Image (cartoon, rainbow, N blue to C red; front, side, top):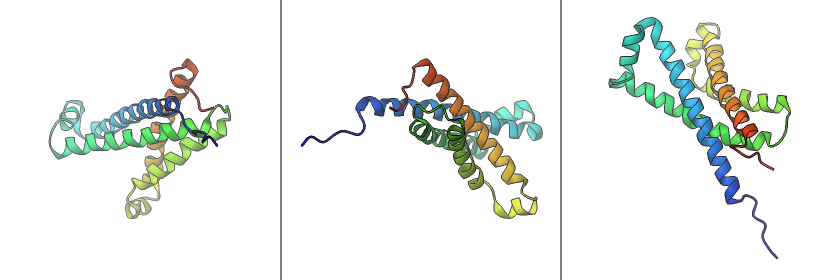
Length: 151
């Protein structure tokens, strides 16, 4: 009796490619959003300088790296969830699920309640941007044949 392998080495490589591509996209989007948060109060030059050193710089890069890791996990999940399906609701559902989990986890609940929920909305909207961008890049990569869909 032969044991059938569920995942081939080629499938693992395609998942790794999806994870790297989505992770880089999410990390870059997070870095842009994090920098945009600093611009109004610091100005462009000071905001750029703030990401280079000290605690401010460390928090910037760690936050971007965490977003990149989240994007990588999203990429693997998205690849397996959507497979070869053209169902928009399924694709949007995966993006929304990751956005809700990440967005709600970022918010201080006491502050959000006192501000009538706006921090929840802002965090979820930012997460939607991150994961929607990652999904769009994965869709392009699959249509171009750079990443193969799960069969």
